[in-house]
Amino acid sequence: MESNLDFKQLVDGIGEGVVVASAAGDIIYWNAAATRIFGFTEADAMGKSLDIIIPERQRQRHWDGYHKTMETGQTRYGNDLLRVPALHKDGRTLSIAFTVAMLHAADGKVSAIVAVVRDETQRWAEERELKRRVNELEAGLKS
Image (cartoon, rainbow, N blue to C red; front, side):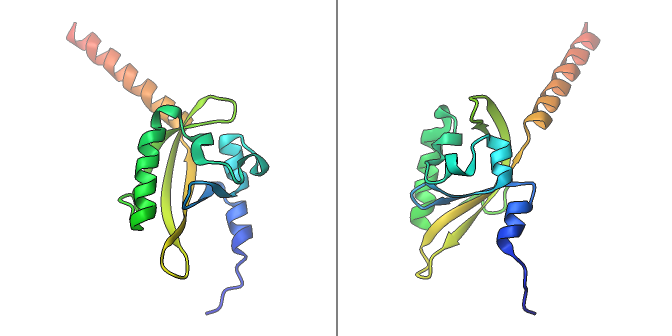
């Protein structure tokens, strides 16, 4: 069955951020939801390093894994939902969840990686507050 689906329209219209980075780690695609999540416009992000959204303390670990993935063509996170801190354009820290997929060139080498991202900052803060309240209640029961 042939599809007349407009994939650009699909990716641009979904509520999840879609960020595609080259094998070198430069942003080559950035949808409107990525702008909503991170605050950077498409013009701000295109051609820039992923460092614009990676907190400094996570960068070394990120790039070690990223370069290994680009060299081997394999990621241990294929179907896993990853939860990590990220940076907003205004400097605040976000809590994001994302999945990744490898994109390959005709020769089979990895050409890019795509991340489908959701902002979980509010959910994470609510969960943290609930844990704090449970701890307080448990401490009160022990007294």
